[in-house]
Image 1 (cartoon, one colour):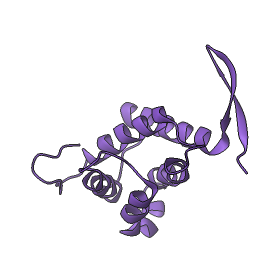
Image 2: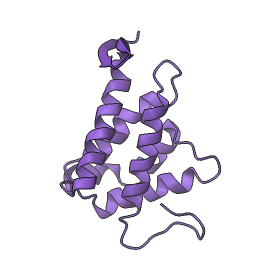
Image 3: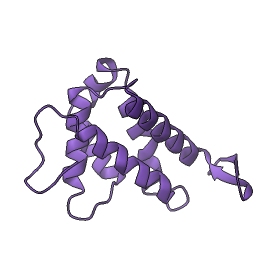
Image 4: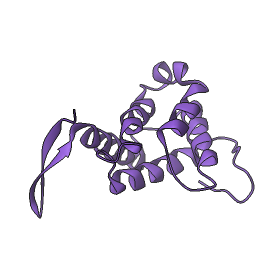
Length: 133
């Protein structure tokens, strides 16, 4: 069962699944803090973002499976390392990506922008030649 939350826009009131709303809020808040400098990703978070970019090189799509694969490589230490906000963002995004009732293109686009921004902070990039964050 999908739970909905009320959202207000210029077009009026509409219902949005709670999971989509949570993913949207997490990506918006984290990107805003990244842009203002009040949140800086750790090297592990930047590495995870790079892995996500590499996994999307063929089709440009973030998927829940790709998020799980990237988190598998160190997700256990990500939370205590830097307050866990990047892991929380990925955790909120993961269920939304593969469910047609939950996915929202603006959230997916904003998430891709955030992943690219975080990957760009990596001290030494592992991105293949020609692939940039």
